Image (cartoon, rainbow, N blue to C red; front, side, top):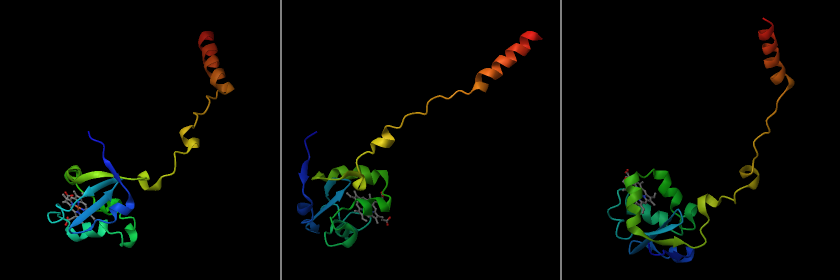
Length: 131
Ligand code: HEM
């Protein structure tokens, strides 16, 4: 597959009109200009989600808006038709910090044997052989 072009947030935010509407969803950039009219959710939601001026999505990131709708898997698979590139310097998964080494390096607890672990079977053996 050909390398996807990477776009800066500034460039993406220039495409927020009916004439040219780009959405940034999950670190990928989608040009939905031709799809807007057919979009079952309407054109306005797309314009809003792309809008650099809309407060909650000030970076023009439509990921949250897209996910909140709970789009069907067919909607998700149709997204590839509009894919034009990736977001430059994208921080994946809601700015998740780098993997904490403490949890990824958790060691299993050492096996602990108490005296009764040995004593009990021995006692059973002794009783059995005495019988
Ligand atoms: C490339 C991006 C997108 C594609 C391909 C897409 C596609 C679709 C499709 C196929 C549906 C019909 C229901 C379904 O199959 O889930 C739908 C519904 C909907 N979409 Fe999108 N969508 C996109 C982005 C967005 C964004 C950014 C929003 C912003 C909020 C949005 C809001 C909605 C809403 C509200 C509905 C529900 C309509 C209803 O059931 O009345 N969509 N979308």
